[in-house]
Length: 201
Image (cartoon, rainbow, N blue to C red; front, side, top):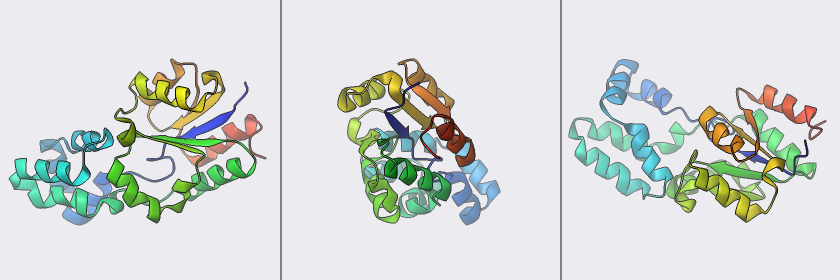
């Protein structure tokens, strides 16, 4: 099938996103497990990804959970360590696609302020032809609205979009709109998919 653009998720496709690993390293695995069992930290982060102010959201969550206040504030103060490191082979794929003339877009659940933190640390985030960042859009994957917004903005036939993401539910929502999809389980498999499509040599 024709592919007119490749759309990348960012977290766990181009940049590792493993908050649990950061907390295992800083407070120990046992305390981290207790913290994540007691608190919906990913739910807090979902609010940021929908456009809520990063500092205000984390600070309010910490104030509401004083037994974990210091640890919760690490989510804000050490955020770039939660979103690390880059996945070099994926970055190489992104740049090779673009160098070969294939439009590359980003479609990512990412906060407004957190993206601002990430961009200078990961310069390849400026390499996209179009960036669809949920915090600016006010809606997150897998809500159908975000895919409709991408289609309306880029003007491409949905069946010509190839979307790579590490979460099956996000791909299922894209597939329902006719998008081609690839479940990211590592850059080698993704590169093979692109070679099969004639987009990489």
